[in-house]
Length: 333
Image 1 (tube, rainbow, N blue to C red):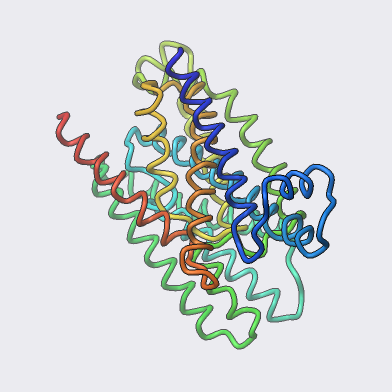
Image 2: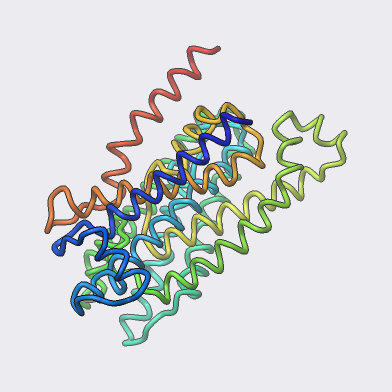
C-alpha cells in the first residue's frame, strides 16, 4: 500500500506542477506571485487576468478532465476485451464519434444554427456506439484479438476518411475550421464546455465505481465471475455504454486523441503493481490528466505561435510505450 500511496502522491504533485507550467506558459509570462494573485484573488493586469481565466484555465481543466476520462475509457475497454491493446482510438470508437459529430455540426452550421454541448456529446455517443457495434459484430466472428484490432483500425480509417471528405468540400468557412478540431485540440474551450463535461464525466465515473467489484471478479475469468454472482451480460453492456460515453465526451469537445486510452492504464499498472479496478480507476484518471496536460503544454509551446494537434504529440510520446508494452507481453508468453 505504501507503493500505491507514493504513486498517487507523485501523480498529484506532477499535476500541480503541470498546472503551474501551463498557466504560466505562453505569450504572457507570469511570476509565481502573479499567478497566485490572479487565481486566488482575481486581481492584477487586466490582459493577464483575461488570458488566464478565459483562455488558459478552461483549456487546462478540459485537458485534465478529458484526459482522465479517456484513460478510464481505455481501461474499461481493456477489461471488456481482456487485452491491453484495446482502446477507443485503436478500435475506431473515437473516429466513429468524430464522424457523427462532424456531420451534425455541418448540418447545423450549414443552416446558420448553433449546436449545444449536450447535443455534441449525444452525437458523439451515437457515433461511438455505431463504431462499437461494428467491433462487437466482428468479435462474434473471430476470437483473435489481433484480427479484431485490425478491424477496429480499418473502421477508424473509414470514419476518418469520410470526415475528411465532408470537411474538405464544405463551403462554409466555419465548417472548414472543423479541420483543426478533427485533428484533436483543446483550443477554444470555454467555461460552459468545462461545466458540461465535468457534470457528464463525474456522473459516469460515479456509476463506474459501482462496477469495481464485479469488474475485479470479471478479470479473473467469466466462470469465476458467474460463480461470484456477477451478471456477465449486464456488466458487458455497462462497460460498453460507460466507455463509449466517456470517449464520446472527449471527442465532442477535443476531437480524437490518440494512444492515451491504451498507454495510461498500462503505465498505472506498472507504477502501482496492481490491476484492481478500485486502484486502476482513480489511478487512470489522475495519470491520464497528467499525461494529457503535459502533451497539451508541449503542443502549444514547442513551435509557438503554431500549435500542434494534441494527437500528434500523444502519438510521438506514447507509441513507444505501447510498443514496449506489446514486446513485454510477447516476451512473457
